[in-house]
Length: 297
Image 1 (cartoon, rainbow, N blue to C red):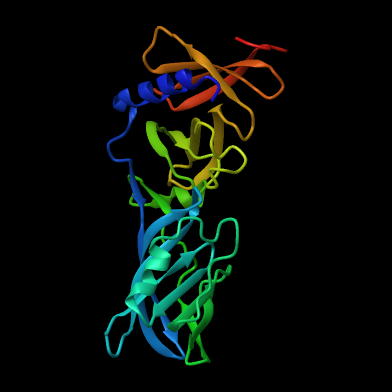
Image 2 (image 1 turned 30 degrees about the vertical axis):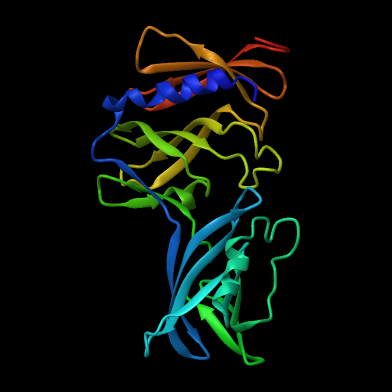
């Protein structure tokens, strides 16, 4: 929890400078907790809807789910409840009270494999693959039927952040940067030769909050996306102001005489003290070494 007060000050002071953002450039956060899938069971078209129920063991990507599916020809909803831990395990139970086993579980799929039950009408297991179609089996009356979902991702809780640009082009930062989210636009620049968008980010170190760096304060810093005139990405740069993962620690903000110039003293893993300069007027940043072998500041 080193330098937590400095981190809080940084976070609270970033978003007061909206005059440096072009109004035609927007970032829309779409952190979902439910998803509708289209697919097939033994060749018959189906629709499935699942939503988040509760997390397991402080891991954001291991959770229970509830929902339903129906055959598109009939449209009679069949209840489902189960688990997601990178793959889906879904049950339609014979008795209503059996759903309580999943609803009251709190460490499922965490320190041990996901629970498996036998008193079901139907059991669905689908494994995540790198393809655009995810495949598995539905088990009913001791028979297995192939099931597939037409999606590239079984996760129903993606942290999508859609970046809308003046020419109508858009990017999902989840695909362009990383899947943790937590980005905010703080500065934009449209020039004759290139365009730039500066983001401030505050994101988890690890989806596993009990894993390496998972319980630490968030990763923070600045990201700079540089585009050509047609808003095609040319390069991506990042300067961290606080990171457990790469051992970068925020010491304090350095006061400048311009409101559009932000500066921060940070120490790196090699115990060097550095000054990060952020120019919000023209969406640029840089870092310079202040002193080597600094034990404290």
